[in-house]
Length: 367
Image (cartoon, rainbow, N blue to C red):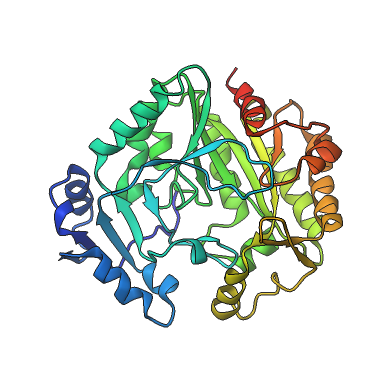
């Protein structure tokens, strides 16, 4: 699909990462972008960190470096609320889009858009991880610390990930995105264990709070094309944002979603409400002085995050769940992201005992 694709103003390459095959491929594919080799990526990061808007400045540049930690990690779920036993694949850090509520503004110390290029280590670690989970189906995705597809025209991650995971029968691999950057996916052969997932919001919130992201309608058109190609899709209404007119806004998007996508190809839908750690509020106030989303009825939850009062969350979840159930033609799992067992029981009529229970519930979509 045609869209305003991201290209950095400059590519910085860590000296120790120059000879990795992925580094060479990225530089060969993008000969018009200036390249600077650096000895110490930490020194570059520190220079960006002291600027007036390090998050915004970091989005201008691409850093190619090696992953020195683990590629596969448990999703950093919040304590005291029910998680879903999800694992994340740390291929990239940061995102060229600039959503006002994005947790990465506070969560990551490295503000540059970063691609980890040491692929040999990646495949070794993923092999080891999946071999250690041979007796169950795990959910693994690449869209937590950076958008899964926003750089795919530069990195072509999907061309490696899809053939690899197609051969693995004990994993559901999820590309989570807000983009319509699906050209590489459409050229490849899909598999039932490859999920392409979109983060959705109301059109009003997308326009006001998701700077640089395609419209929700563009995302749904991409989802339609991917679904028609034979991939499974998923959708994440997270964060649901409470504002004047939210009922009509989310009803419209649910209706449009279920109009354009084959219901039998939907793997799951998740719901989560706006939540943030106290330091993020100050960052949002500074970077997005016109936003109103942080000035509502929030309480500090057991995990220390601000979240809407339970009656607000309850009302929003109930509305979206009702609209999905009213319009869906085939059954698919709906689940909460970082919510209480109490709300699970009240609104989804399920009360998972723990994260493994949630994993089993969602993994059933493979069958």
